Image (cartoon, rainbow, N blue to C red; front, side, top):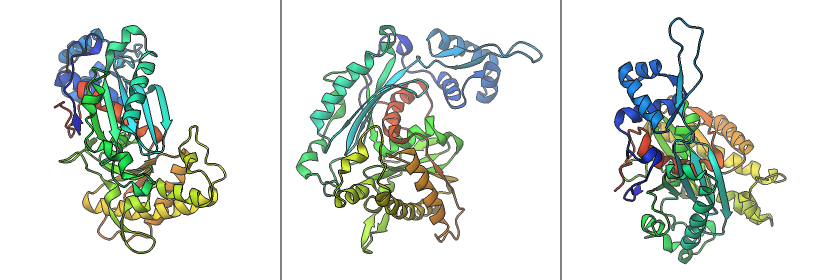
Length: 399
């Protein structure tokens, strides 16, 4: 993951800089579990009740938490649940895709406060930066003026080697080569002083699922995100594992064979660009797959064989991943309507029964819960994690 130098952020939640470990611990417990009484926070964290009380008073003073209504009906003092204030912190998440760019402003609860989306034939660096600059201004204006200093930073999610594989998406190499040495931090600094955190888009999607989605149900799991190309992530002990180069879970590079039996990678056999090609062959506009709101009606004759093929590929890929790490589950999400996601998961479950799983424990195959927003939402998680939460596997100290 690439990082910029973190700039000083005035006022509000950030006036004390990075939170200390115990503050992060309590904020993380509230983020993962929802509002909890101070006594529960002390028990789970291992901190003394007095220490927890002092920290909660400071967090409340800083506008990071809210106290709920007292819970009565038990012997002793009423229990007062304490949870994150959704207005305690915000972050921008920018997703740069091969077919679209998206920007959202996320609050401390992980809810988008505003979103902007633009479809394109290919991502042009200057056009994307123009979109980001205008989008930051437009989305910041949605917040009350007194809250705007609580924006923690800008997370950017983009495909690893964004300039690669132009042939698969019908784009010239020249159109993408501007990304090869693009300095996100320096370019964004021209119009925003916020810190910038850059990571692989599929890793960002995995992070969104782990922090705000069904990923909280599982300790260790493999994650697949089906976009124009397919990618993924790895979660170990409730944290996204990034690897030595920030590229762990590069599921799209798993070896397989294409329909002709030639060596290929999973990106060649289980990605949405294959469905685009089916639409094009049928004389339909493949851009329809990327328009919002979703409307894939009437495409069943093209979608069904694509689902069958991708289901088989992902069943084999799931077995391969579980041969390396004993994952309890494999989560699958993608840039498509929820009904397509459910149908794909059903196909994978069925096809996994045809895979030779000797020596392996069959994992649960489950649908992710975030959907198309996962990459932008996961990008927005990074500034929040860097300043406020605990993420043991991440390298989130700005360079």
